[in-house]
Image 1: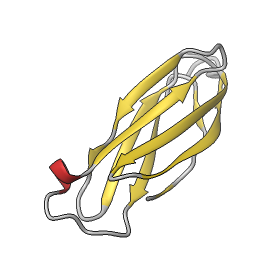
Image 2: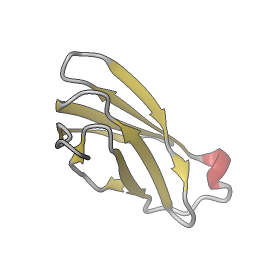
Image 3: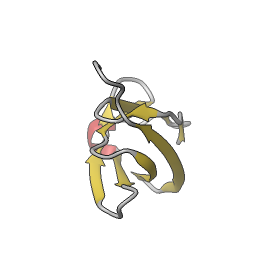
Image 4: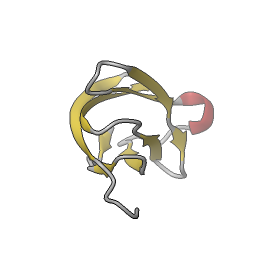
Length: 95
């Protein structure tokens, strides 16, 4: 699955879109998507993705600290997990 990479602000929801090259008879039960996010302080969070029609799945995540996060997205059937990092910027005053 290919996915988009983004940068999010602290306490802002980020969204990653994943697109499969394959069509599945029942994507709600035939495919599972999970993301593992690791904070700058080492805390980990597992988030389930959801099917968003056709060959698209999405993962949404709201960071709880600023700094450099890493994440890995997994899918079943197995696609290579993708390790990426995302900066999370502190909120500006008044936001």
